[in-house]
Length: 222
Image (cartoon, rainbow, N blue to C red; front, side):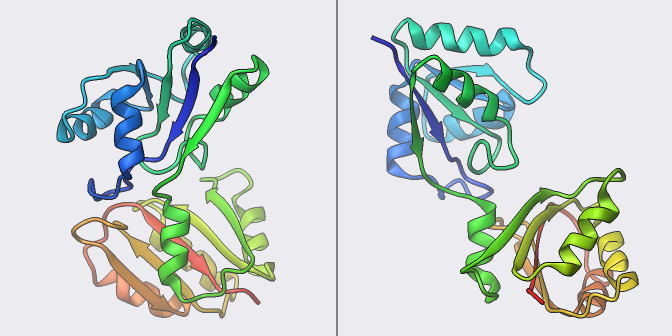
C-alpha cells in the first residue's frame, strides 16, 4: 500500500497561524519535504516536531522527486511544505503533486494560511471574482502583465518585492491607473501595515515609510 502525499499549508509569518491538523500531520508523517530546511526547522523546532526534513524546491533535480515518490511507494507518508503559505500557490510543489498523481498516489490538502486569501479578506475590495498573478516578472513580459492589470474588469491581486514596490507604483502612474489599490506589507507579522488609495497616494505613504518585507498588492476592478 502506498503512502499519502500531504500538501501542508504553513504560516506566512506568525507561527501561531498553523492548524491543529497540520501539526498532527507534520508529527505523524515519515518525511517533510521543504522548500528550505532552515526555514522549516524554525517551525518544527517551535512545535517540538522531530520528523526528518529533506530539501525540495523549484531547482531540485528530477532525482529528488523520484526519491520522494519512492518513499511514497514504500508506504511512507510525506508532507510537502513551502517556506510560507500553501505549496503550489506561487511556491514550489506543482511538479511533486503531478508526479504523485501520475503514480496513483493519494494527495491530500491540509488547508491553512495563504497570503492571497488573507490579503483579500482585509482589502475591502470586491472578492467575488479576482485575478491572481503571483509575482510580476522583473523585465520580460512585465509591460504586458501591467497592461493586463490596468485593463482588468475584476479585482487583481499579486505579489511584489521590497526592491520593486516603489517602481511598480511609478509604473501605475505612467499607465494612468486611477483606481483604488491596497498594498499590504509583512502580512501577519509584527510590523504588518496597510496602505490604501490611488497609486500616487500610496506612493507618498510608502516613500516616507521604512519599506521592507514582501508586499501583496490588490487593485480594484475597472
